[in-house]
Length: 279
Image 1: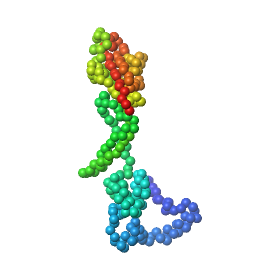
Image 2 (image 1 turned 180 degrees about the vertical axis):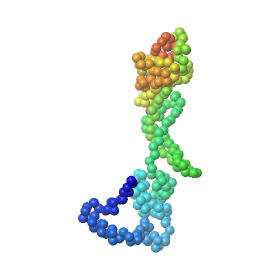
Image 3 (image 1 turned 135 degrees about the vertical axis):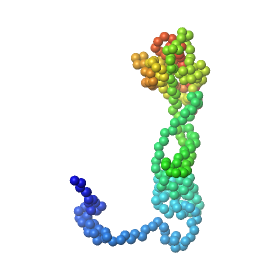
Image 4 (image 1 turned 90 degrees about the horizontal axis):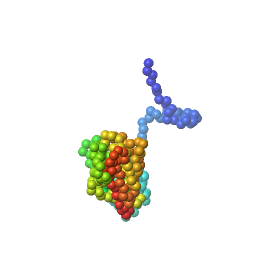
């Protein structure tokens, strides 16, 4: 059997019993009366004199405390929003126009948005220095809105690029072993680590992270020389797996590596050089 739950008629009244009794009595006296609530944000003198506004700020920004508080919450000083002198009002409107196109869009643009920025560049590019400043352009539109026009904003952004490369243990590595001594092959990271060596670049305090994935169908161990951490001889990297070793390449390093297990591992070597660039 269903049972309805009625809202407590005193739910909006004060908690103190004595005060609540008075409030209940007053409510019962007026609750059935019509609501008459003259209210507005327009100065009566504006209507009386019917004078033209000197600029948009005097109409839409300065006299409206809701608008000024919201814009102030975005970091704009109040003295730039409430200027009364004619020379200050254009500054006020230009500030609003720069931030929101028009103050009318303010209520639609206060929701926070978070995004992840991934930048992919050729491995030979030098990472940006810490605190580098570049122009960042962001374009967005309202999801699901028919014919929505994208909103574009440009701003300077300070960020540091954390360089990372992904190497792969070559496919069919065992079939390519040969008694030829040290031979650099392209399967690890293309020609720049193999037959046509080309240096990476980074700053002294910005090492390059190295991820090694096994693209072969059998397990392998990566032998690393000075500057490249040696693989775990007791735990080969399984097929399709990622080598758990944490590896970074510091500026100025010149190193190499090869397949540790089995015969003729050096016939499938890689070579890496990292040049130092100025921050």
